[in-house]
Image (cartoon, rainbow, N blue to C red; front, side, top):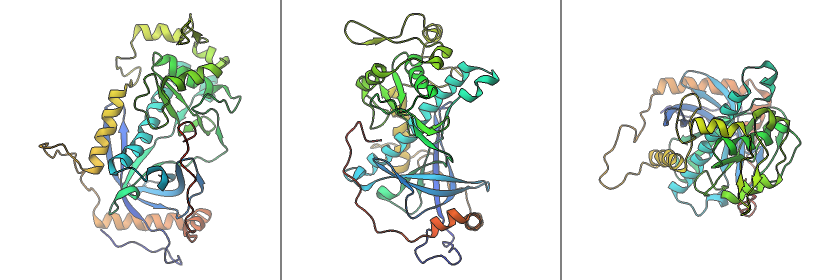
Length: 359
C-alpha cells in the first residue's frame, strides 16, 4: 500500500487518507456488495447524538467519483462492553434499518404516483454504508457513512410517540409503514432535511431485530396513541386506526392499504411492491455481514469466495486517488480548515441513555 500522503502545511497529526472497504446491502437481490474507496475523516466531530459522534468526511471511489459525507462512530461507552461481533452488528444494524426504511419510502412514493403536484410530498432515506478500515481492529475498525445533507436539520417524531413538528409527510409515512406491513412494522424517529430522512428507528410487533431502539409493540402503541391522521394520510388511502376491546390496534374500516395487502400479501416478494421484511430476513443479512467483516466461520465450515473480498485497487491506483482526495479537500476552504484543525482533548461521553432516549 502506498505511503500516506501529507497535506501541504498540515499539522503533524493532520488526518490522512485512509483505505477502506465499503459495504452496502442490495435489498432487491438480498446480497451485500463491497467496494474499495479512499476516505479522509475530520479529527473532531461536528455533531453528536445519544450514542454516536458525527464527523465530516470526503470519499473517493475507484472510479474517481468524490463527494462529501458524514461518518458516524459509536461512542466508547456505547460499545465498551461489546466484542468485535457485537460492535460490527451495531454498525450493520444502522445500515439495514435505513435500507428497510427506504424500501417503505419507495412504496410510499409509488402510491403517490406520477402526478407532478405530488413530487414535493415524496420522501427518501439516505443510503447508509458500513466502512471497514484497513489496518485497524476493534471498535475503531468500522464506521457508518452517509451523504452530507445541507440545510436545516429537523426532527419530526421520535421512537416514543412524541410528535415534534406539524409537518404531515413524516407522520403519514410512519402510519403508512404500519398499515403496509400488515401491522408488523412501524418506522419512526423521522428526521432530516426537507423530505430526505436519516437515522430512523423501527419497531416490530414482536420486538425482534431492527436495532437497539426497537421497543416492540409498546413502541408501535405509543405512536398510534398520539397519531392524528392528516390530509396526507387520506391522500394515501390510510384510515384512522381503531382500538379493540383488549387494547390492541387494528386498521380502520375502509382502508385502501388493507385491500391492497389482501390482493398481494406482505409476505410475498415482488418487484412491483419492492422487498418485504421479516425478522428472519433482516437477521440473516446482518449475520452474513458480521461474518464477513470479523472473518469468523462455524466449525468445519469451508472458506467461501466471499469470506475475504478481493482487493481491487493497485498501489498506483490508490496513490492516484489519495492525491485527488488531498487536492479536493484543499479546494474546499471551510472543510479544509475543519480537517486540519488540531484534535481536542477527548471528553468523556455522557452516561449511556435508556432505550427510549438512545437515538
